[in-house]
Picture (cartoon, rainbow, N blue to C red):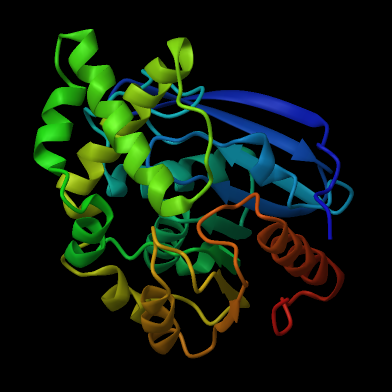
Length: 294
């Protein structure tokens, strides 16, 4: 099942929030459609065009916020006043600013982590959860990602005044990420590399603090998550967010369905993952639940 056509832009909002950040929030699709918020990964990555194209623009009102320090939000790469609790509070501000009482929350990787934390903090705001390649932010998850690389050394280098040191750290991290994801993209250069430095500075900031999801843990927070339609999509060969995490999450959310997407790795653009996401969202728009998965 292919992606939907890129939806029309309805509005762009510049939402000032505490701590000197200004969030870019874009709306796409149908203004009277089903409200859905798209939570990008990273942290620090920004909301890419791919993510909005999972949704049918005729049936959804698609809200795409760039989290603090990410994408079109300013300051780009900013880590001050940038924590998970800040992002959860920002989601409430966005929802209130747009006049939305409840919304479907879709997120992948870190976006799925944030979706779970948001749902636990504000259960009455959640109509449904669609979580792709969930990252649990446990110490073992972070350690497995970096392998022989040192998160502390990379984080310090990414904040160095020396551009060469910053870029070298970003490329080392990027190569590790690519080797795990298996996507084989060309190495970033120029402005693309500068964007990687800013993205990874934010990500390092979060990972060094356990994403502020250690006490209580993300799995422990599942007790507060509402029993709304919930679908977990995960690839068994995902080496960035291993399948074991999805199994552990489903045990804590017995009302959730866990559907395996074969051979998709950690790539949201893999045809099998695209088909699974599009089919799930089309089903939800048609009948208000996700069904049994792909």
